[in-house]
Image 1 (spheres, each protein chain N blue to C red):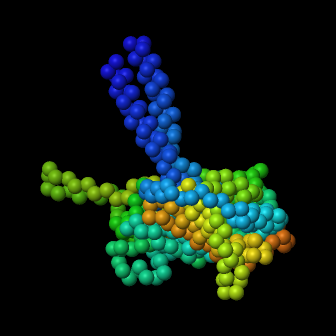
Image 2: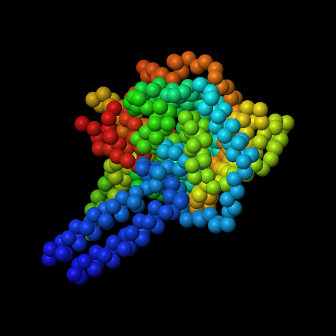
Length: 159
Length: 278
């Protein structure tokens, strides 16, 4: 048993060490240095990420180039038009539709903590306890700076 | 003993995966994860690239590095075609612009525009400040004691901020460019609408890059980078103009004064939990 424990201990150490090797590699640039540029970094571009050269607006959400990068939720790195729809018209956080018993259907909306590269329309700037938020209908967003732009985190209503 | 065997097998698999990942020359994710778009990474360089290092090319690269580092101040404009991954995994490009002012060792101002998010970035040797002029939001990140190299690393780590032209701002670009250089070719003289340029081509394990430098000043005029280690080989092109070296830049250009109509927000890398400090 002692041998097994020793093996487990040693292997656990190596497992942790090995996992550390799997951490993301350092940023690379056309030169090499920490903090250098690498392709695909910018999620955020243009003051209105929906509009990429004004072309994609009239094409709907299908195949929208801008939707995949500038318009998508950042957290979880989900790209695509589906998310773009969620940004433009956020669904309620949780909608519970009760059908005749015993069936209950729960539809999940975007989760708190989801980050967006832009706000939906109709938002109002709010100051709560000295901090800046945006209230968009029943949803609250907290802005932050980073990643070459401003991002907005969906949060519960601040107290 | 069975347990031990299971662990050994698992460890073997883990090591294989880990070293497989670590040795892939193409994983360009950063600590923020913000570069996940570039994480499909399996293009391997063809092994038959000839390791030629032309002394003429290296001399031109060194001359460019020397021209940059000899100047106490730099001003230039960078117009870039930057690759972004579209929802169909195709690399598409946005056109960004940046006006840059730098004073060694620790002062920098950048104003971005074009398709880039419009913002003004200030580094005065004490704070790294970003002002989003249209949304009227700003952040201030203390970076006391850091030079520009240190600031670039910290801004990338803390906030996922990078600049495609950052190579030119380093205190020793030559060291950065050559430490894993695998090839350097002097392609020849290039005529760009009457302007005479030297054209050199360089390669490292996961990047091919070409530079066109002004024959008189040795300053870069065009850079074209192919990330050959990244799936579908995204490319970056930057055109540099309006070079001014050694001119006096007022200290006020580098220091940020928060406008009364702007609100302070936190500085964080997208994809990470916002630290909620304001």
